[in-house]
Length: 125
Image (cartoon, rainbow, N blue to C red):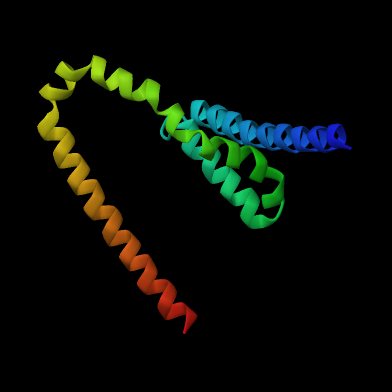
């Protein structure tokens, strides 16, 4: 009984990871095809959202793998943090540009999110 349950969970996890990786790899291939205008991971994420929204892929099919990745996401950022610490001099040289870009990007995203929320509220009423 316990082995059957573990095998079922492992199969669900494996199938969801296969779906997630297929979307990522498809996004990477498409990114190369369009000469890297957008990162492959972003294209893959948009592809996954489109497949979920259209109903071609059910949320339950990807929940196990996505939940696992989200649970361990903080650990996945450790190598990035170490890389940033190793490049502090480079980071210090472009601190002004990074701050300006971060502030501008945040303001643009807030404006777009506010506009989108207002538009959704108007269309719902």
